[in-house]
Image (cartoon, rainbow, N blue to C red; front, top):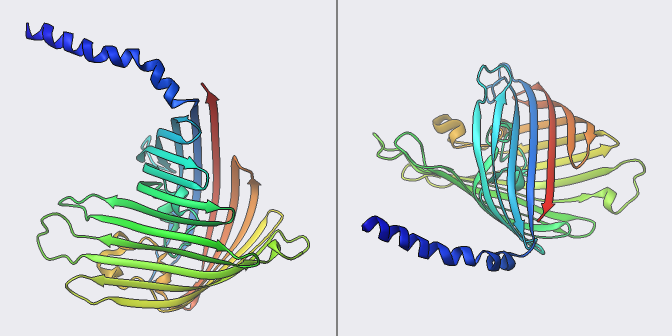
Length: 355
């Protein structure tokens, strides 16, 4: 008797839903099916022998990220997929996997995304002071949300990335970040920043201080090619920024601030590029010896008081769907010059089908 009653109740509940399918479809409006396939291969060889700040290593692998989604009313999107990483030389079929699943709202100048979505969408323009190449290579997803407002070349972005959930083995950690760019015609004002909250493990065997790590870069600059004729030069961008790092270990230290200047020059012509970053001031990452890369996600050479990085670039293919580029980098720090060679290939295929 109970079984028959349950079946009857389920039938009564499902009937209105079935009858309302057409009405729901009409409320949703026009829909599109989204199919994507993203591939990103990297080979990055760093030669930091005898460095006290960095380690020599070769990072090499390929990401493949298939995804399937639905968009309706031209505003709402739901996307689901997976990012699979295969490291070169590994015997495993897949070395790392990350779920991709998010909701996105996009209308006029506003873009809001929440879930697990590509890090490149949020922090792809952040300097290496904040996120090193290893983060870009091995942590492709953000788990959190991002809200942005954009009008032409000006934008504002606020985001949260819940990086680690607290367990007895893992520290609780999350980012709260913001960035903006204000177009002033012949010049611009640009800002990048985040606060990284790094708590202890659950039920720690001994006292472990909670760390707050803030890092900010505010720059003024100008892309000279946007307002003057420089002949065959495609881009000449010059900027000068103020770096402010603020840190504390609760219960063991007061807030500590460290300041520096960061000058950037970027030149592009045809398929060739030259970028130079010059850092002068106080070194960052004062608690590095205690927690290392768990606490700091930026390039470790910014621990130095004086650091210059020069990148020589060759863009073999540069299109909306395919990008293949070669980098040769010179790192001047610790009284010597280190070398780095990198090759990247990125493919982004997106298909839309109206229903």
